[in-house]
Length: 351
Image (cartoon, rainbow, N blue to C red; front, top):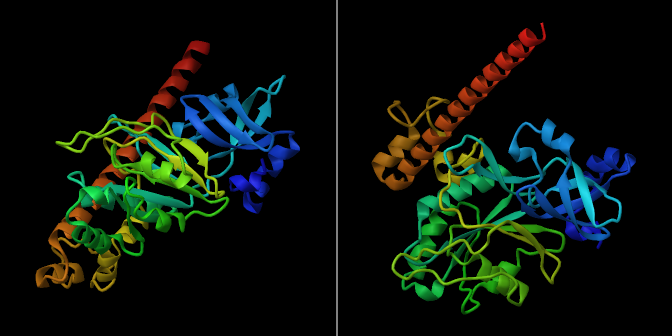
């Protein structure tokens, strides 16, 4: 296996130089299952685990190896297993706030070039969810492509495609059907040797079925969804990096039952280019578009040039991101106070 086939380039080689000097090997994480990994190296695929020192020194779970990461590892005697000692800096990262009410970052996939945001054209079609995915991908640095799947189950394909295009900005929109192979060829136009694509979407939208079509055979398990609510179980239990016959790499991800964004800087503006363009004409640079005078966004809303649902969605996402930022600062402050108290207690016991 040539590392270039897996997306290796001069920038990763430069970041790996010090690890190479220490006698470590480079590899890319193909599967993560808790702290057990499958890593692809120039010599082939190998089972790996994270070193104890790395586990101890890592401050956040998001800094541990994730699918798509390039890592530095040392093979153990016998060559059947290896130990991961470092993660190379990520070029891109698709992240969200971890599920379950925690305030931790969860990395869904690392070093991806393109993200296929899959929506099903059935009763589960949800434009607000699509907006959230667009923000997440723009912020992560990847190129979003909106994929509207299950066209064979929809009688209003043109209408829903138009709705998706109205909010996708510069992101391409592709209508597909994994059952009839509609749109599979246009999807292949985004696949290039050594480039990585990730599929993101809720359960039951057909991510695994589309990957099977791109691969040319059934390599991922699929199940039928319930007809009355279009919901399905997680067919994909973990994230996995797959090499397609044409040389592109694809990452399948489990369907997301809940999605909370982690952060957004320019990602929010890139996902809402229409509002960003209007906001540039606001009188106040820090305009919140709520009650200010000479607000170009509110003027467009009043004149009917801006869809009210889209405006309300933008405001809701911005408030959510502001709240999450404040919560992270609060939890960081509390964690530092607890750590300082623990150090004082240790010194008192030692004294």
